Length: 268
Image (cartoon, rainbow, N blue to C red; front, side, top):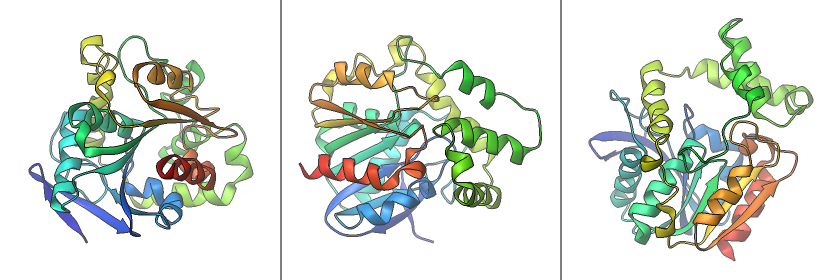
């Protein structure tokens, strides 16, 4: 099991491909498996570094609460261990908070930045839709039933029904690799800590020096794509790409199209 010591903990990581380093930072409660449908395609062009954030998967799970800045330090320490001074950074959802922390606090470490299905926190971001909130906070039924509902609402309408085999594989992985409740709560604190305006990234994003791609699924109900315009208005050199027929989990829904858009941006 490959691990690297960073910021007082051990992180599990995987390296694929060769070329310019590309770091993939997963979202809340997900380990590096979140990117498994995209990694091989990206590895044709880049040295892809995927890893389990602290609190999930095969990485250490110290007591929380965690912050975006803490996990940014974890990520940069991992790059230091690999003697990588500068990399492309892709952060999805909660991973986007970590990516923003890296880009704001250590702009010299970021080649190009991809903020994926995320927001800047604070009172002016576009929140989760009431429909998605209702489903994700509904505790009725058994855990598998709740997981299936959560996946369905987080994807584009009809995706789960049209892709039953993928959903079964998804549910199977989550069942075989259950979330550590302590680690999950510690990660959950990252988003909660960004709710106050003073703690959000909204007024810090002008410090981002890297060219940035803001990437959303058109039908994301968890982090609505209205956040893309808000992020773009704050980041100096930014552009927006919206993936049609995709929701919050576009790395599962449209991995090839996501790879195409990301690669075109990074190589452009």
